[in-house]
Length: 270
View 1 (spheres, rainbow, N blue to C red):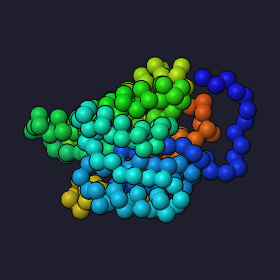
View 2: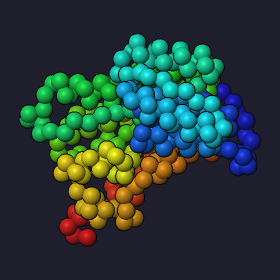
View 3: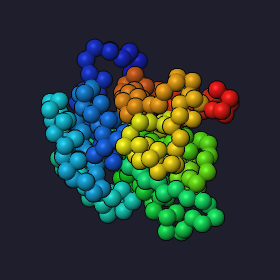
View 4: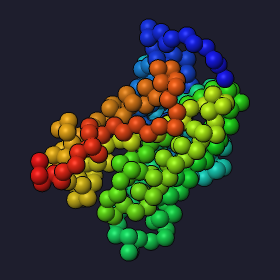
């Protein structure tokens, strides 16, 4: 592990020459993070589960920014898929400097009726997937003696909300994984942090609003900055945590929510 005391030179791209994998990056937050990384000089492996066409569209955008990119189909909840993806990325790019564990799912329902099958689906993707990817790519980073892992948690990783039992359990667990791995792997030069996004304007949010699961107006009223987030807000945080400017930050959870969690009154009192 380097003990250099040189200060970061802000001239040039923040991630120039880095190799990044962003899971679940064919759309939404993952896509925004992948494009932000490419804009800052990184080559990016794009992971998808089902929609290869959308993933290839992101690859095309990244290549348009002058960076290398390829799409890798893999179910992050399956060890054989993750190991195969890790080998393929190493074969193509030669190393992995940044892993963003973004892939996830959510199934909403009352806890007393929540099925074991739904519980397993959410925990497998949102928690087991973080474990499997962190382990597979963490081994690579340990050998390199350098690396950065960023886990995307949720407001439900810190607080609770009705109908999100499995999702909250998984996202709380993601923060636990972040802290343990930061403790274990810091001596190998591997930093591990988490991001907690607030309510972010994505296609998924639009669907939840349409189905009546989320009241967008209430969230805006309870957010001191007076708006919902956009994917680029989270992407900017992910750039910071991946870059040398945060080289002494590890084991932390960065909340990017416009002040929502800090606000102590119900939205009806706004």
